Image (cartoon, rainbow, N blue to C red; front, side):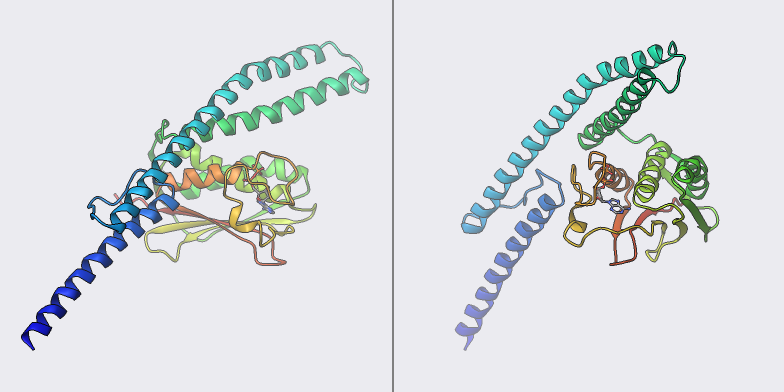
Length: 293
Ligand code: ADP
């Protein structure tokens, strides 16, 4: 009986080490899936599990390398595009100043050149931002600020733009001060992106509902931007935060807005969630940790 018990104990102990090794490999695989490369399991076994861990390391290194190549490519292409685009829109403006008849073909052509090069310039800036943030080159310029005030200011700034499309913002402030420790400009960029998406998918007369409140998650504040547009198709929804992903309802844009916003929010220790219950438009929720002094 003693012998059987000892064998049992040895078997159980062996099983426990196998399970914990598998757990470590699984944890490492999850890290890779979450985009954290190069964090393979530290302790190695000299068996199939060890081999699996090694293979996983290889995959991780390969993904990291190709991410870097992609980032460098995006960054150099955007840099190359920046200068000529500035020249194109600058010259269109200069030439337009000499055109006296605003209804002439020249005036309209130059206005199109100016507008479209401006739009392209916006995409290029987004791409540059993305490669900088993605490569971890740019650190956040953090200060303590009131998220509530920042949101109100952004809405004030954007209201005109939405009004031009007949869309109005309904703002509900259900919290007092909401201090966060973060990069104001970047957070504003997230709000601008979300409001701009909501605008793009709304009809004249539609409302965009913006709320700020305490999150269900303790110590977090939640900002929601909800539109009453057509929503996102269920098959698109899991992908809209991916880089360059454009849903089948997409009109213009590079498909980078939400990916960039997600990256910015994640760098702040928060989350960006996109929901689209059928027939109820889109709700984008930004949750950020409150700053405790
Ligand atoms: P872009 O920068 O091109 O706007 P985004 O990353 O912001 O790209 O959005 C990705 C895709 O998600 C869009 O192409 C669109 O299909 C979908 N989407 C985003 N916001 C909304 C919204 N408010 N309503 C409907 N679809 C949306």
